[in-house]
Length: 71
Image 1 (cartoon, one colour):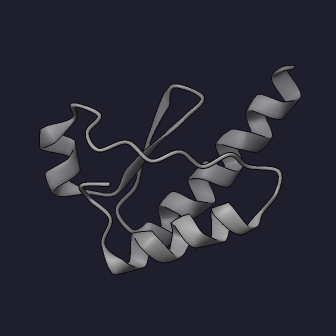
Image 2: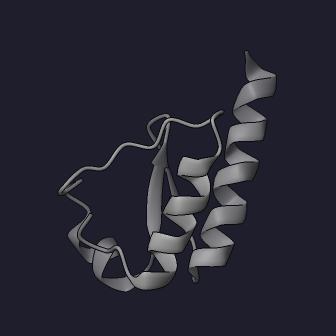
């Protein structure tokens, strides 16, 4: 929640519109330094970081795809 810029909010909306994903919001994840520098997300407990919101979206999709193949 604390690093939700307008471009990150757009990515969040894209993910929420996909019924395959459960998107949860947390007020703080305790990654203050990271949160101040770049967009990030936790995907099944795995930290995903990126330079831009669009790159974060792609990395989230990739991480979900990789996790799907592990199970």
